Image (cartoon, rainbow, N blue to C red; front, side, top):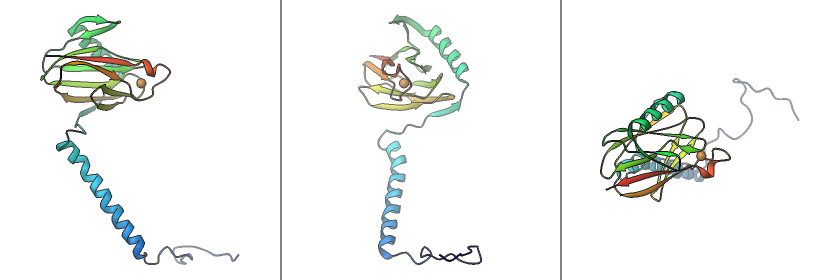
Length: 181
Ligand SMILES: [Cu+2]
């Protein structure tokens, strides 16, 4: 093996600077076009498919958010269900839902066809907000207030399931949203 010195002045031996083979060029072109298609789908799903909601994101201290949620719960609490406060905010209200190991801060009672600003955050680790049986999924990250404009369009009872593994009690982390006519 000969000792070779590589620098910017002495080019290394190899083939990588030789022109790309036409076959390879074709695949690069196909991949690039596909990337652009996927890239275009993101805004398209938002405008055409009603997916990828644009939220209002802000940094928040987890303790502050927990305190705000508690105040919200106290202000609009209408009952209790299995130890969880049942909270019925007025139309248009800012609704606060806090995820923490391993529960949700309240059972929300909302009105159909009414707009709310739903604020989601976590007190500890990453959680997932998954609304069943309809398929709404949002990641909940501690330190961030994720504000989402929502208008329930279906009456009934919905489950909130944590879809981000968050520890030993993850499987019992089930919440509820009640939508009334
Ligand atoms: Cu969880």
